[in-house]
Image 1 (cartoon, rainbow, N blue to C red):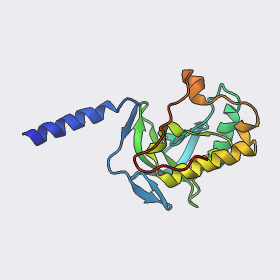
Image 2: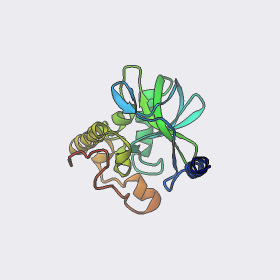
Image 3: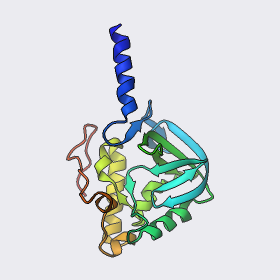
Image 4: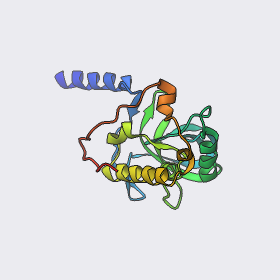
Length: 191
């Protein structure tokens, strides 16, 4: 009886989706293309790109995990979308994921057939920010890769780093995102 109550309570709480609007998908922690990812998989052809961090694959909206791109009404918003379009539109990709968001979008990492990580490519090109507020949700090696890609893009003044830019979370909410000081699953050195 007690076990069934706990199971019921856990399912009710998971249905709430948590305070950040993200609902985990069970059994994450798989590996794809040598990267620790969620165990969910969708493979197909990208039919549309909404902005620099959102696309449609097999009729399902996909939000690119670990990054945040400028909104379309922001400076560099259209260029960010165009960069993502050039990378994936009309191409076959695999999305790995472990969660969905408040809008029922899959939140995942997009891989090209050669194992190129599209999310990381957006940051590397200066087409998106590394969304550090969610850094504890990814493996330390991924945190390090995203931070290094952003540092390099900023140093080279690539894309959105060529001129003063407002982070999309500040543009949307008017406040800086809260970045965890450390993560329970290890922490990358500051870059």
